[in-house]
Image (cartoon, rainbow, N blue to C red):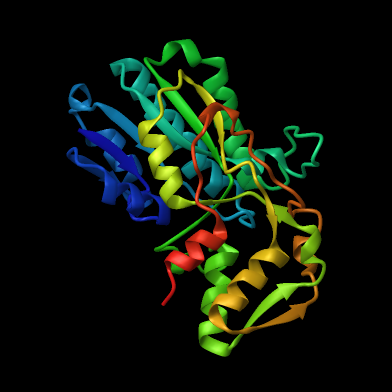
Length: 267
């Protein structure tokens, strides 16, 4: 039996499609009730923890701590007590702004800080778990993220905008914003099927591309136009300029590119 938190989120739903084992689904509103009332921990073979408040602009620290830190720690305490393996979603947002030559821990928002708190707890208690893997997801995109609205990837947002208006909106200077975009299909495959020891791992492709390039690929596919807009004031200082995952640990794994994804999803 597998416990899957965040089962109705974008990534959670994609896990649901691939897992054949019996699954206990846990959502945010029922999280603490679940912890208090569930009594079959000795039957659980894996905790797949994907649930969290994922908004990088959320400013309510109490709310973020309640969902992203406190509940996670309760869940991990059960994993330690009952010897249950854990695979959990961390975030590349813990790195903040990167350069091509330097990647340091420098969270730019409260969401990223909550993810880092959990990573630090795991690092300090690694030997207490039977097995635990944290995955610092980079910029995940793919089928089924329409409901995320502003939190959706630019691949999905740009496609939606063009289908509705014939144009996509792109921040001026987007050729300077490079991100490591990874298809959700690759996320699911690697998380479920890797043989790495306990630890915290980057999970991107290791090949960042610019928002400008993504916009051009989507515009070409959808036969639309690009409309350039000013960079929002509220994002200044809280927006990552560059992200790139260290993916040497996956060996020769072949990642799907943004262009391959767009071509395979031609409609």
